[in-house]
Amino acid sequence: MDEIKPVRLQRGDLVGVITPAGPIELEKLELGIAFLKEQGLKVKMGNSVGRSYGYLGGTDAERLEDLHQMFRDPEIKGIFCARGGYGTARFASQIDYGLIKNNPKIFWGYSDITFLHTAINQHTGLCTFHGPMIGSDLGRESVHPVSKQCFSQLFEPKEFIYTEELSPLEVVVEGYAEGPIVGGNLTLAISTMGTKFEIDTTGKLFLIEDINEEPRAVDRMLNQLLLSGKLQAASGIIIGDFCNCTSRSDQSLTLDEVINYYVRLAGKPAIKGFKIGHCNPNIAIPLGVHATLNTSKKKLTIKNGVI
Image 1: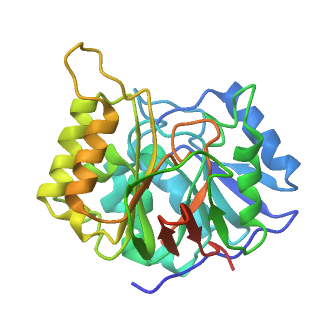
Image 2: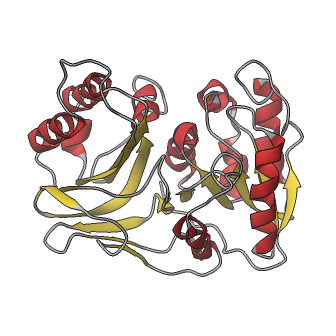
């Protein structure tokens, strides 16, 4: 699939906010909307924002229509997800990928949105953004300034360089790797397996992160990726934040022991310690664009995600 980069944002542009997974508290969302407006953007809410259907932000049909409507509307220049949770995989097979390919624009989110990132990139070639949610992240009273600064990459095409100036990094497997970045949330990457949206890691830099998973659960998921050849197929592995992934039992391997074991078995260049995921700061990066991972310099260099 040929790479498609969305057009950069300009001050005064109209952007959309949707809840393709779980419902959002409107009070939190108001703080995130205020941030977008501070960036000089105008904001349009999806029709289902504020609704709830059990643990979902509206019915599948309602959430799908919001996604379609935002890509269909020529005035909308970027689409931001209000929160994650669960639900995007429920309507992935009903998405009009031709509509998205013919109307490429910025698409931003993470966590459960990983399923959409994977599906959209593999079916359209559109580069998307793994970044903090407008409601659940930017809706906090205290947001790390680095998380906010990451939005500047949407306004100006520029190379993004991640070094230890941003966070301490640890080399797990030495080497140099390059390729487009894929992945995101580990649990959601696993949920694509055996479907027509199964994540393709071949020759790619594979990003993994997660939250609230015990080491044995991370072990199970990484073992599945190893047995299926997904870890070995990747050119390199980017290990993001694993928030609150500690054991509730006295008898457990540590998270580091689990991750190091499988990543070393895969034998591909790997660095851990990236503040990407359910963390503060939550550093946003483009997915689907070419990047290089250099362990000798402890550096991840990512090409611009917009044109």
